[in-house]
Amino acid sequence: MIIVLFGAPGVGKGTVAEILCRRYGIPHVSTGDILRTHIAKKTEAGEKIREFVDAGFLVPDEIVTEVVRDRVGKTDCAKGFLLDGFPRTVEQARELDKIAAERGEKIHVFNIDVPEDVIVRRLCARRICPKCGAIYNLEFRPPKKDMLCDCCGAALAHRHDDRDEIIKVRLREYGKMTKPVLDYYGKKGMAAHASGLYSEEVINKIVGVLEKK
Ligand code: ADP
Ligand code: ZN
Image 1 (cartoon, rainbow, N blue to C red):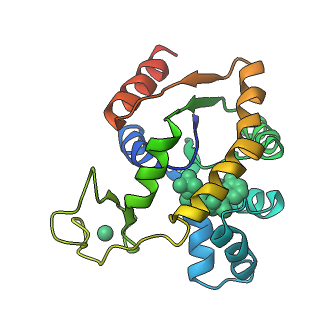
Image 2 (cartoon, protein in one colour; image 1 turned 180 degrees about the horizontal axis):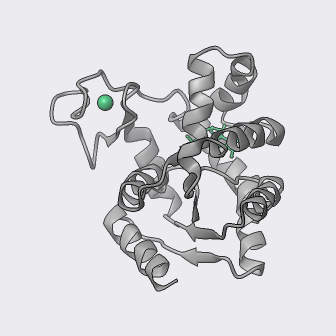
């Protein structure tokens, strides 16, 4: 089982991903998280990756594809995995088709759509735990103790790219580079819609579709 969560930045892919992965016992493969780890660990690719991520641009296909191939080749992905933030270009979608064909697995794509004004508000108020990856929102899902992670107590961080001007660039990148991926899957009849403002709503729709299959 390969699940793809598709949608603009800030539609709640990360939150939905965590819950689905726990339910189905598959790993959560977030390209954003993996790329940020490269930056934090200052790997060879990290410096180049940082330039794109900090500016809000997509990281080049060759780098991201390599990172994904490497991650899904690990043994914990043997029974399947969930992709959050990949594919983001048609080229990446073609690459994923190849990966699925090599493994003899089917891809289940879910599109999450949320109005743009909601997205901008959510991203500006988003805070993440740099230690365990938990996601908070100062407006809708604040931590219990001021600016500390409920799960591990670490100080929450505001992602550099979760700021107004960079959010605009990311949404433009989404419209230009990533939206066409939806047409790509649409033409193949592969994308199911799972929109909703609340993650419970989105999860119920996805589980409903998966359990029918
Ligand atoms: P969000 O979904 O909120 O934009 P992510 O953590 O998924 O956040 O991505 C953060 C950044 O990482 C993106 O703005 C982009 O620079 C880079 N990135 C993540 N996934 C990809 C991808 N599949 N292709 C190219 N760049 C990516
Ligand atoms: Zn934490």
